[in-house]
Length: 156
Image (tube, rainbow, N blue to C red; front, side, top):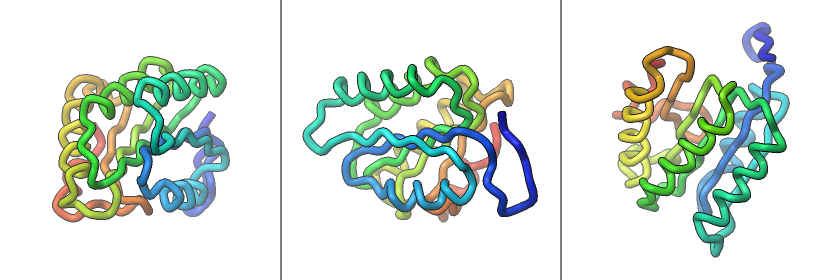
C-alpha cells in the first residue's frame, strides 16, 4: 500500500524498472530509489531475444504480485515500437494494481526512442488512461520533463 509522507520521503510502494540493453537504467534506478523503498529490475541482456526477455519479465511479474509503479527505460537510439508496446501490455495485464507507468527514453528529446515512447504514451493514455486509474508519463532518467515533450507527461 502506498503511503504519502512529507515531500522528499520515500513511499512504501513497489517499483518495477524494466530496461533495454544500452539504456540509462542505473540513473533511473538511482532517482527512483529516492522516491520508492522497494525497486526491482529486469534488464534485457544485449544478445537476449525479445521473447526470452518477455518470458523473464513475466516470471518476475508473477513473483512480485503487487507493483504500483512500472518504469520502462529505453535505449535512446533504438526503434522497437512493437516490442515496447507488447512489454507495456504485458505489465498492465499482469499487474492490475499498477497506478503509474513511466516511459523513459533517455535525456535526448530528439532521439528516436523519445518520439516512439511519446506516441506510445498517447496511445496508452487513450486506450487505458481515460478512467484515471493509471497515469502515464514521459520523463528523463532523473524524472525531469523532456524539453518539447513535457505536455505528454500530464496525467491521463
